[in-house]
Image (cartoon, rainbow, N blue to C red; front, side, top):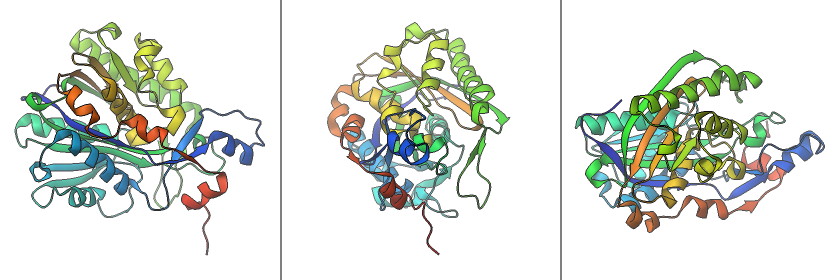
Length: 348
């Protein structure tokens, strides 16, 4: 898919909470340390942090890089599967906090882990049609896993924000995008359920790999590219093994995906996962680099994008904290404090 007017990223920003729960803590509590851990540690939001506050921080970083007046933003969209309210958009909170109100559109997007790229697709369409010059797309989550469940090792927290606008002002522009969706219920949460359910091995095939590989290969075929045409690639990261296998099947080397592979250090940040990986890549990107971004959302579907980095990336990279700065800013907590911060112990 290509818009009528070419669209690019004017500014981008990331945010990762400082608290870290080592995977060995989950192992210690639930398996007596015998099972082995899928990642090193995950980011945990503090008691005063949620999807809205994290989105605000990432959005402010995106605006620092963009250097535009926020009143010019005509859409503020937040993609998440863990919004702070059941009935009230987080997007209005973000729009108010960054000064984009009142002449703007605001809405929350939902599509599991690809809610953020779903918002990005819509922003490309709106800016690309000429209906607006700037749109803000955010992916953010404070994901939870049931105590003792395999997801508890990896369900992390973080946010990534992208201000989209005309290609002429961009630090990276979109060549094309491709989406692939089917009804595959590998992961879901019903009303009134506190924790989601997942299909265990079913989440790999026919869920993650079928959709992510189909979207990625579909885009490559449309553009006539192979993995060798890209400087870097980032895929949705539910764990370490899945994106590495996907990269290998598509012909990408370990070096091409290494920069954006963050899951071992901050966990699966769900709607922010692939988008956070892209921020880490843009922090180090050079003009002319071509980057592949492919998300995945349970339910199920994937969005794939090809971007080309412009000369403007160099002057904007250091106008806001790098993603690695947030990852390095860590404070380790134990399982008891994690339970308190995530409100897993309900007092009646």
